[in-house]
Length: 300
Image (tube, rainbow, N blue to C red; front, side, top):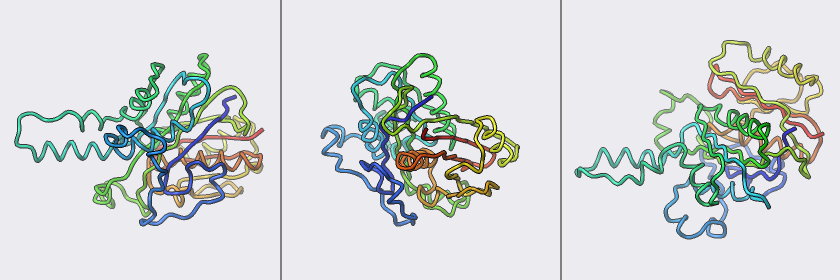
């Protein structure tokens, strides 16, 4: 069994430092702001000056998951990485008249910068991995965390983060077609084999990339494999899909917005709900068509 311990998110919802975030969800609009804490109370002034927005929210949520033992592994999923620094680096290349460029923006723009900054801040030399598989980055990171526990590790930090920048709006209708607002999200949590006070566990994870299989058929087989009667599901959180299950269904994109880490925030919402009411929740992620991620969580 793989139990969720401390979990934290920063998003466009009231998710940071709240125990039961599912009670305060609001449907997002393009004007919904990113709700961040007072970073000065959490991060040192040097970090506030040099870190981009996505690094601040990722580091802050990761720090909320600290406990008495050091992390045996840090696993991060991000579809687009540090977009703000990527844009800054490319603009510098385009505008520069010098033969010498500062490498800072490039160094901070790479996808593994998030995991690297967490490791550097915590002085953690354990396993550190970043997974970049579009909208399935979180699910694959979760699978990696489970693998580490099966190999004998004890305390794994798993998370996902992606950010919005104004340039994404220019891609809408051309490369990215969505009616949902672009958002920034960072979600991190501890994964252990030991039970937590909330007793919420990850029962199974499935990832299918470039699949032509029928989603409803895959879901039914996934539930059957886990001996879960579809009628006994508490809720299904999905990414704006037509799902044939008769249980209550919630389109989590209404609350997460369009973000490659949206399923990570949906995961936090599900964990929050199960922390209050026992049951079983299925999270279905097909934000990128033909890709499918399924996460089954329950409170025993």
